[in-house]
Image (cartoon, rainbow, N blue to C red; front, side):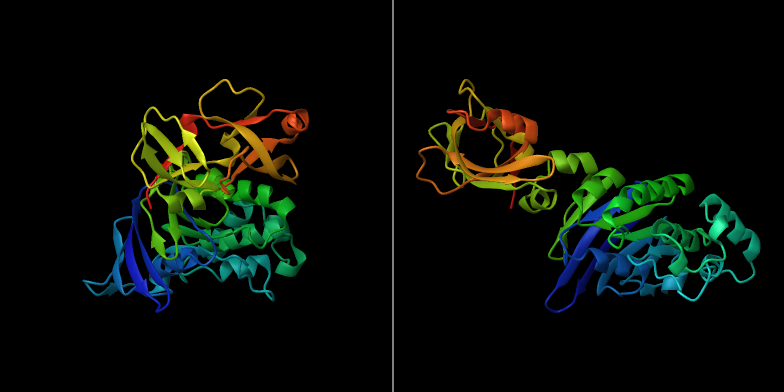
Length: 346
């Protein structure tokens, strides 16, 4: 279990984040510079918060009121750095041995066990420059696992890896976490990674953390504008009510909403907007195509209502085959299903 509530003033930047979770893998999702890595460093004991409390598995490692601040080496936390931080002049075996904190333990037996479990026995005598990215990753994990850590911190673990290797290494890390049942805090700005890896999520933006939510719940119902942006939503509008209708001010359209929930903004994900050939349903609008952007597996379209004086637009993501079938047809429309709308607070 992780119970964290900390505040740190860096002058021009303030870190303020709190959450409690007993899930296996908790993710912190946010843009670059939002405070994700700073949060991990506070947990690990590298940075001391100005105030707050950190409890890991019912063990208090930091409490500003009680003047508790355990040293990093006493917190039983494994910190997995982006570049693995392996010693280049040491073999795989010696890199793992360097991580053992209990000097009285049977080092040889412990290391051999981890080499076998993580499939590293055949490269035990090789140096980091002689092994693959995946083998470096497993060596760094083995160095952490020899100490039976209470918590594993993964700080964007795939950022230093070529794209074609990421999937295999992600699977390996997930299998290792599940095998050893290690509570893990996973930091990333990649929403696809956290969706696959994490049981629950905390979003953070400009140092301010939001309430923890189950991963699928956050993507389905992010609740705040910040969480929606961080989780990949691209379309937002202020909303005004008038004569029983609701105007999406920034999209220049009126919406028929049967079960409206009071909010500051509406949002809709790009893949939720449909391009259709008939205007036979509510919330369907003649399409004016502003821009077409071809991507690897889809098109991203920038659209707005035809004959509208409003300059607002929406982004629509559509499968390539579907768009190739539709584009060029004389009358097209875009449709917004009420159930796909996100009701967001500031």
